[in-house]
Length: 465
Image 1 (cartoon, helix red, strand yellow):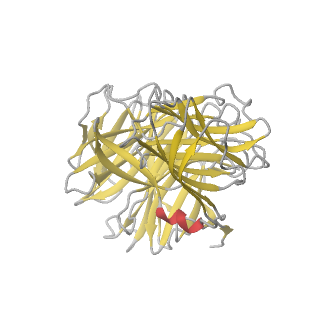
Image 2 (cartoon, rainbow, N blue to C red; image 1 turned 60 degrees about the vertical axis):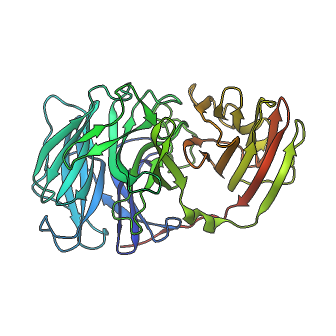
Image 3 (cartoon, one colour; image 1 turned 45 degrees about the horizontal axis):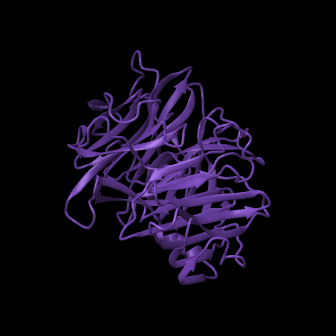
């Protein structure tokens, strides 16, 4: 099986719905379906039957889902609506389906498409829809632009705006937009965030996710930063096409992304499946020295997977001494605070350590850079772009670097300084590579605190209708 972009994220009647790009017959990309899973706690999931199948109109590409509380479409009270792209021979249209049984079965709108393919645009896809004040809003990727549409009923749409024109990274085609409003820190001030997948040109190479900070008037988005300001949601190799949940009951902006990268996505090691998702993150905005920036923090629900607890306080770490000799694990949550000084060159953690294998999460003090080195992380020879060292600038806060790390069987996700810098990385180590190391080079470093939690597995069940 193959999966890629998350689609149709919506909360309804006690369930978080996660649809996703899915090819049930192969481990490489092919005729796209919408797979479907639901959860009540964001941790344990039930796989449901495929929601949308390709047909004579084409493959089912990415899109979004909404709750039509006011029955604007006439499909029924509290009907769920799915807005998706059909792709047939590179012609892309926007279409509608609906469900009146909590998303278990779907009916495609007989009047599709609701937005026909424009000429001569070939890349015209991935609608994200939400209700804003008194109308529906759609953001839609088109080449190196995001188009905005408005509607009263999900069926009849009118273009209302266009954002692009050379803003941000345009090295690859733009895809999978998302648009939402967030407060800035704990204030009454707010901004709108527009996230955009970019097919190439990301900091780690290949595909990645950029974002823009600005304003939305109900019809069009404007960026408050200059055109040449490029902001990245993630500096690792594997965070693409993220989407956020509509109707999240506590008002959080929760996001999940596809953990893969298009240059090597079809080649990663597999054992009957290819594709995975990131841990779910809560998005927030903060005012930094460089302007307003997006934060990503792992959701607090993940703490319920913690089991035993290892803890260290106020340790001095020296070269050649590893205080973690007795700690091992394949699935771990790690929270660390390091006090830095100019007397040290670099320090950090090595995870999934085994014979000739390790993934290094380090901080270069002189360069003020955080990095993840997966050149020896396990299987790396399936593509020349995989075995790389990925870096991002990161300044300490009060001379402290804080790392929040999730390690799993095939992934490492790093949240630094409360989510200001994030790395999402796929790794493919030997199952026996489960050792941990603390390291320092060029001096000593003070470890303020270190907490390590082995994680219990979440559950995945198959359910009927």
